[in-house]
Length: 324
Ligand code: MN
Ligand code: MN
Image (tube, rainbow, N blue to C red):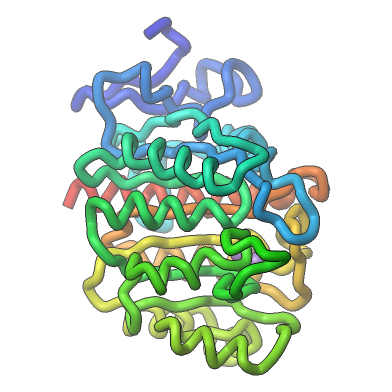
């Protein structure tokens, strides 16, 4: 690899470009200024972009999410004090670039995304996907299922995403978890939605969702039970099942994440969600995504900063899990 100033550790790990030698706004932009997958012999954890937003039903633009989150991730530093961890030293974490997929054919794109993720996962390496719209969680769960079997899904979102077809299309950003449940990709009774709020089509939406195997932590309950209460509900629900974490950035209040396609009032704060994620550090997270960041609606990188820091917590848990 051409020397771009990456830190090289005694254990052979190549980590970030050294922010004390090369300013954080200089050089190529990879996630957290980590090496690319092709720059190292092997890796333990990967971060990959999925620039796909053909499944959206309202405001488009999440196809520009991956590069935007990478840009804000340049400020992430090596030591995570909340989890007392050095994620980029404990494990070889890489930026695997973007998975190229069709902007015109959803079925074809889902196949391309699944194929790309299966290559990164290999025999079971954790991968964090940066969307893209929420449709991409379906091929991600398929790729994870191929190695791990059914997983517990912890899904942070304002929306259930267990709806049926829309304008005749079965695969949209509103349907991935209905299909995942019906196809046996997730463990019914071990999966949860967190942060649900906003108007629905019908009361039946909630009944259908329960039939698909989910429990719901409604956003309106969070002031009462707090982040610790949310965490208790999640840990209880998941048990010791391997976990896939899916974060739709619209789980955050539009004040904390304006740059998203389907905003809903009354969401979580970034601080609450960061606390919940840190509390999940003992779980075996085998895959995760952060989706629905649509940069065109942002102000002052507010949403990108939130997404980059959520990604940091997820990568920390994946990297330190590798050490265990
Ligand atoms: Mn949503
Ligand atoms: Mn969603």
